[in-house]
Length: 177
Image (cartoon, rainbow, N blue to C red; front, top):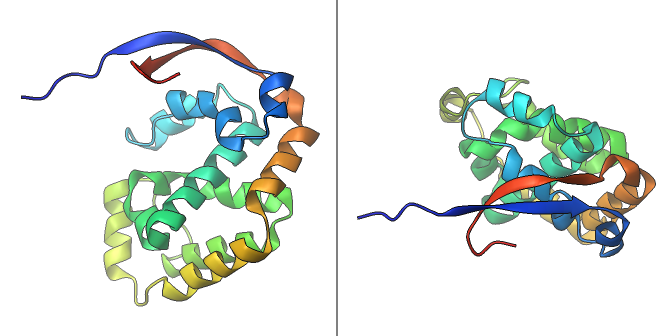
């Protein structure tokens, strides 16, 4: 028998003190708990409306990076996280991270230029793809050794800090701060 997760309401504040800790994941914590990647494009975009474009970009880039580092581009597109590809691409462009942009852009081209936001359709696109992403995964991992993605995100956050401020009540699972 499955136990239902218990949730509690937690006040979350992202301010200069949190930004000074220099942890992009903590700075975009409100998005992790507010933006669903599982309910389709309409719900995903509706959830993003609460946040600034810079917050959205950092969230998408962190989501993309986490998936690629865990299982490559195939995993990124196969999982629900693939819904963030457009925001990640725009974010890389906005941050001037051209090499990251180029890798992600090439991966979209292999899926016809515009991977579906619908996970089932995107998985069908993966099945029909004529080649794999191994070369792009390798290029991404090599790029991470040369270009500090976390540092670039922090610089962007610090330059746009007022657009990362947040104060609100979020539902989080018990045991999560």
